[in-house]
Image (cartoon, rainbow, N blue to C red; front, top):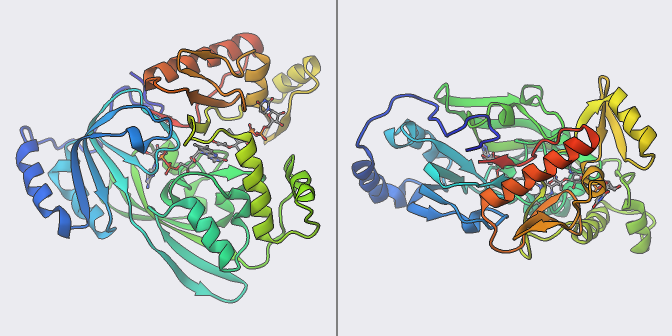
Length: 374
Ligand code: FAD
Ligand code: EPU
């Protein structure tokens, strides 16, 4: 069994386990569901809740609509006694097996402007808001900054988990505060930007896997912001649109078009975007690789490290568009693991490991999955 969070099998964060609990608590909680801001489904299918579209079942799916319900749920023996997997919109998870405990879906909604001095506004967003809707809301309100992050799937609460990024921007640039339930301490916690320890596709929340349940994120959104158009293809797309002086919304439109062209759509073919991170390798290894392969795309990685293109490594290893049954790498983008129809999570993970082994053998570079592999 695998879990990229580090545990071979899900382990409850707290250890107080009351045996023989399920039926009674379940009945009691199900009875209270309608007025307590959450609902419960037993033996729930997760197929429609992960963008790979793989079948896996949760012993119990708890969907939270009211933030106030979270504390009570975590203080109940039901959640204390069972492994809990938090799920947003399932666009960055690969489920290789059923989940024996509780899948907690945060479906809370709300966007609240806390203050606005005319230059910058602080905006608090509930974790269950859809990220792309929030980006479009921010543009329609005259804010700027999030346009490069348009069309990234998922919920707002998941955005800080791996510090989502695209087209030369990362969400950490705009995050002021993250609110979370700390499962280990059993209380609410607030993280300012520095405490989130953001890095490339990483944060304190991703590292302390399963400890924090993000419930709201506060952003600082500027009205004036220098547009980022340096990422490969962006200026060309704007030129194609015949736009010389883009507004943030026009830049969002250009990036939307680029993304639709480059990445397979999960509604058509199951995937989770990039399956591997772009690896950070020692500068010396990067130099050796570049001497042998002048066209290998690289970026500065900080502190003696260079970031190299995982898509390039996979394509050069001959794996772009290759499939084994219904599991394979996309023929549109070499970094995207795809489910051609009925692959199981275990088959997809098997194919991903084959890709990893081939790239290691060929280039001496270790690829690390970006999504959480359960
Ligand atoms: P999920 O997949 O549900 O969860 C992801 C992880 O976060 C899991 O470990 C889960 O336990 C945890 N989690 C989720 N919500 C919470 C919460 N409230 N509290 C605590 N933990 C939580 N990512 C990028 O960075 N850039 C891209 O350009 C990009 N493009 C993509 C394109 C496609 C087509 C797809 C399918 C994915 C892409 N992704 C990209 C990945 C994905 O969209 C992001 O990682 C997104 O933030 C995941 O959101 P989600 O709600 O689906 O999270
Ligand atoms: N490339 C190939 N073959 C391919 C595709 C790309 O060789 O099939 C090479 C090309 O040289 C290209 C380079 O890889 O110039 C970079 O490709 P791309 O611009 O598509 O970016 P990426 O490094 O593959 C990263 C993120 C994406 C993000 C884009 C745009 C990671 C792991 N992935 O992909 O994020 O949207 O940049 O900023 O950092 C995600 O995280 O799920 C995701 C999709």
